[in-house]
Image (cartoon, rainbow over all chains, first blue to last red; front, side):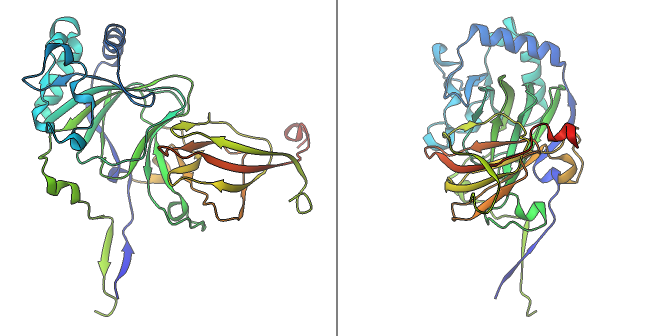
Length: 225
Length: 111
């Protein structure tokens, strides 16, 4: 009979603050300008503006082409949505610099500005790739939430009993690396909007990827050995 | 419930899909009987506001969520801690029957 031995979790299994920092005031001001000029599309809990598109994208769709679920549609892969919208170069030069600088450091696919309206919650989900986030506006009571247990146990140990936990990312210009393969969601309990600049890793997207999810926090052991 | 505890308000609270209540605290103990609990609905307790991200999850987390299943049990909640209700479900409402303790007004000042 197999038993499950639980390996202690640590914060970096879920989120890491990287040693990369940008001018948050310049970013904030350009994102505000962008939001004034381009309509964000999507449901209330995840309105988005796309900053990358495919090389053959029609001009009128560049700001919105990549906000749909790529994995679900199976029409375009993450690796194809890597062209940074040229309009950034002329009108939003710092955003252009940040996007290019991030692309020089990581293999990046989609880049989006994501807007979570006040008191809204994104559905619980997991992603297939690493994501990097720069919070542009991060109200006091907004956080990324990772689901942990679904056993409805309530013992003395919080980590055994909690359904999950949240991490707040402050607006400090830092880049946060998120391990989106863990079930997670974005929650905004505040009256203000939660705005994040999100960079997706341009992962190799094949059908088999959808099934790569061994939970490496658990080690299977055979007590008879 | 009134025969077991000193109870004031009794309400049914409905949280719609994709919504969260604002983070707040109450002045009294509350008892919850869960009527409908979608898979990813939970009560979230705010814990830290220090923005530390070290190895220890308890030091680093902004807060914790607890899911209360619809199992007919009464859940006693220490509502004096900052908390909120969250419903990440796509379509189902989160419905709780809530009993408030009949607390002594201005009890904090009196203590």
